[in-house]
Length: 184
Image 1 (tube, rainbow, N blue to C red):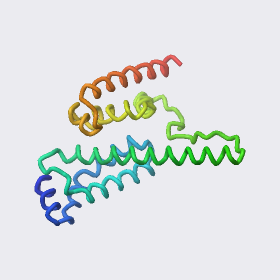
Image 2 (image 1 turned 60 degrees about the horizontal axis):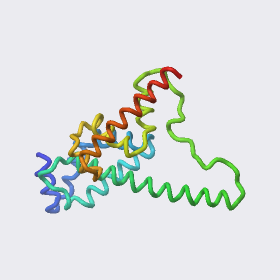
Image 3 (image 1 turned 180 degrees about the vertical axis):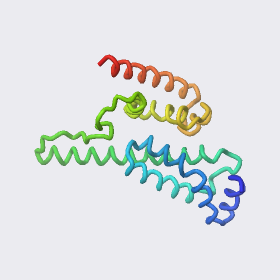
């Protein structure tokens, strides 16, 4: 059964067929979640949120569109929502620490604080992960998700030209970082 038929049937109330889409796309969606979230526990949460939101909003899916783009868009929006929530909580925690007189660092160690391997692919993954989201997301979607510039623009809700310029800037930053790693 093709994606379009499954979506139409789900929209008609046969929600049990949604499981076919989950089975069909779980690997690329989880892989993308892992690249966005940077660690397995957060990726698992993002993965679950993505599928729940997709099922809840199945009536908004256009059966003639590329379903993986729709799932990735939901994933990106969930990731952004989670980042905003974390940012609010960090501000509250910092405020509580300041009020209590705690002088410790407000920065929590991230997943990039793992031991550096000499493997070039590992260094590149770390370099990609260190990019700000506005550069990292287009890189992940273009090079790892293999989406077209127009699709990426739609998913990120930015013009295609902005996608191109962010990819160019990301490549410059990655090249600079990899050169520093090599000589540093």
